[in-house]
Image (cartoon, rainbow, N blue to C red; front, side, top):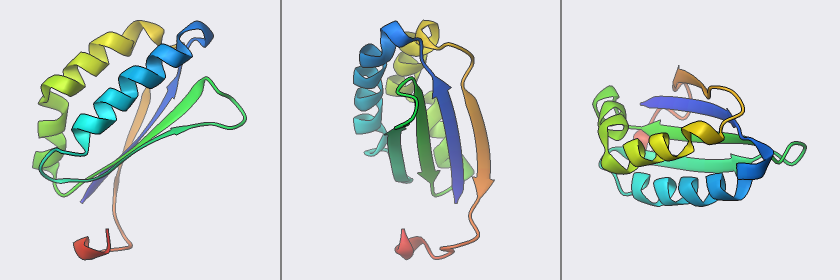
Length: 102
């Protein structure tokens, strides 16, 4: 399994547009083969700070996500709305180790 945690800081004037575009990306991403989770979170302390938690079965399915038309549309749509470049960190899963526990 491959987990990617992405932090995004959005310009204050683009928060609602970012939310709408990211919901659309989320809805398509959870239908991808190999997707286990795709959570979209907003900070309670800072409404301009968002967190994406993406879990895929394999590196192959992670790469496929980054090539998917809905992801490419999202990436191009939101790029100018970010206050700074998004920060993505990839992780390997320790627990739960069994895919049926996801």
